[in-house]
Length: 232
Image (cartoon, rainbow, N blue to C red; front, side):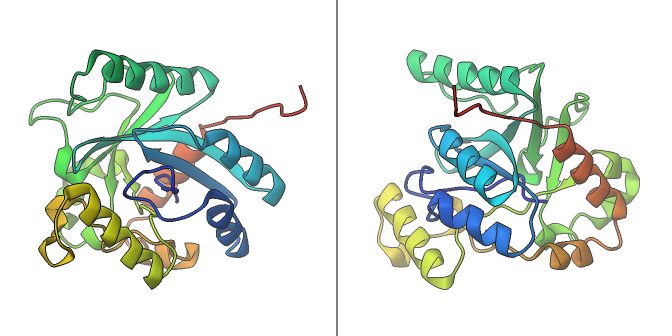
């Protein structure tokens, strides 16, 4: 269920060292985990190494943001998908062009859009594109889901901190990034109030009325593979 995890490589946002993230996931019996740091893939190889040592299947990707706005999450289905993600990000960095609201046509990448940044009305999602629903959004989007979007919906439970201390650190990082006082912070500045690691059983119970969403998420994760031979 964890397709959007941030580490300390998500600068001025994430608070969790990679080893601590993977270790906590292993303690809760999580068998598959995705690292999707913000506009960055620097921590991927450390992440894969830690996952290997804890018996967790790693998924790698990138969360794309423009300033404080989450645009979409890209998950590599294989090594070629990882290359596609990095080429896309590098091109925008080198050319100093803003990231687009919608993802390009990736061939080996699965894209997950948050509910606040869906493609324009009348535009269909591609086969590799999904809608990420947070547990806190289920009630709000219940009617929409009943109108036929279930087959394209997946669980989106971002992970940014593991404790209240981590949450407070995250808020301070957001204040620094936005150059404001803590008292001036708001959600529009990218402050995460619900981005913590939730036990798998709690997520399944939360989505119990929508087993299709759980199944979609599991299938998405099973379609992603990324291995590294560290002995070569």
